[in-house]
Length: 293
Length: 147
Image (tube, rainbow over the protein chains, first blue to last red):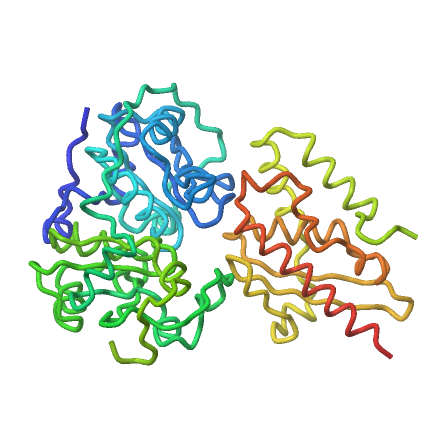
């Protein structure tokens, strides 16, 4: 049973207002049957230090990834995971997390590959909820198991693989990494572990728009008009474009994918999750260094 | 003297404590180590420039190493509360190594974090941060030991 949408004025400007809920809305609906809240963080222990009451934890590293192949879980794996968390196919799933929701956006993107019908992000994520002094708890959430059906993952619409990107060259690409990673000066994020790419730079033709530009200081998404100025204005994207976004492993670019697809309404946006850790190691993959696309 | 490549008794006990537990309990224990990490003394808190950054950790971590004249090593760590995993790793290294002799620290196997049974719970990528902290501690101990 799907819950009502958040009618907050800011969201109505976005292409799909139903994809976001505010902290006020969530606090009001926390007890509603049919709602499941899940926290997805960079830090695997952050949830344990205190989480939104009743929320479950969804970890990208240890749960959404296949443990052997570099890929996400398959249909049966996703069904097992959702069932264990007590998430049903008709649940309204609200995701939130640390670092401006980037891991929550990643989890949302993976849920989208499985076509989960109603999955939304908490605007402002964990930081805003806590900054507003709202309830958090360390109590272990007990949810009854659900019976999530086995759904085949559909990678065709929103996921790009290396060969897709090679065929896409010449069309719009957005590189959401930091400027130093884009130019090739740095092989990995500043202050982050080296995640092994042999070559630095960017995919030829890719425009640099660091992902965090879409987030305001309070971790909420910037209003529609500001997003238009960045992505349509500066980066020159048009709504009808086929766009591929990428970063290092596809997590930060999920945030930008969410912005372009759901908030700005671009229908054809794919996330290249192989991203730089694949491209920068791929023999003969074309690379450009420096500040120019 | 402990043979090279084996854990000192304190780290050995920590590893046994972890592996005796179920998965969720291991995460709780890691969280306890995060909570037990002592705050920085004022001489470092007021001078963060004296700390060495460990960029290999997912969240920022800073550490300092001091070796007494008799070879006793003291370790200091700084990591934000919103990075409990990184704090937990630092807490384990503090509990397992602080106050030991330089030689004992240098003998700690670089891959000792693999003995905590955390790979499937925390992910190997996140565990790399702990190996990086240890490597940097050892390098500083080696540097300070030189006459």
